[in-house]
Length: 251
Image 1 (cartoon, rainbow, N blue to C red):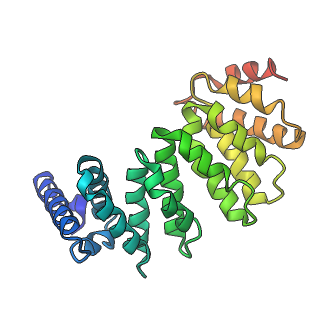
Image 2: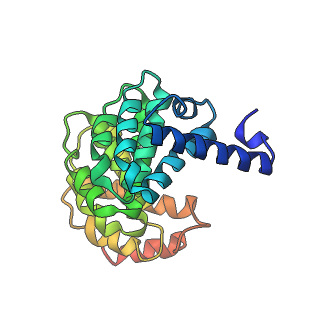
């Protein structure tokens, strides 16, 4: 029976059990009681486990070194779900202490399994929202990596911060404007569209991208922004027509 097939009271009991077993195993410095949760087929069991790790790290400084040691061991596991959960746990820590877990993302970016690499993207998004400065600094070092998938993943990973603070990530996106790989270019156009439709964001995006020198890319971005304001019309600050008029002031 999966996590959400359980009743609310049963779920709460299970969460308490997971939290206790993980804490007990961390204190003992063992993996035996942690691995089953990290490798569980149920996404919500794994999520409960990595959230527990994050909370314990923040509230018990005496266990922090053990937690990093345990997560490093789990990151070497043969099972992709275990490695994925290790990255997600590191992401919870990185929202507050990126220096302690930076090496997890340096490793996870190159994992052979897509789910682990996706966990890096997801973690960069959540860390960048809460702890942007070191995340952006780290992301910058990979912007021109020879592997196109690394460049694409970094571009995608910084998106969430841009939805509230586009000025923080636009300098990084500018660096990718001449990337010749279609998947990277498509992701770049997508991300700029995604950071354009919230309040006070479109103006910042337009003021920046209209100074870029890749005019063909700018044209594609403008089309995407117009389209986004239709696709996300229930969430956009501007209507599509208002967005068109706003953009005209910068062209």
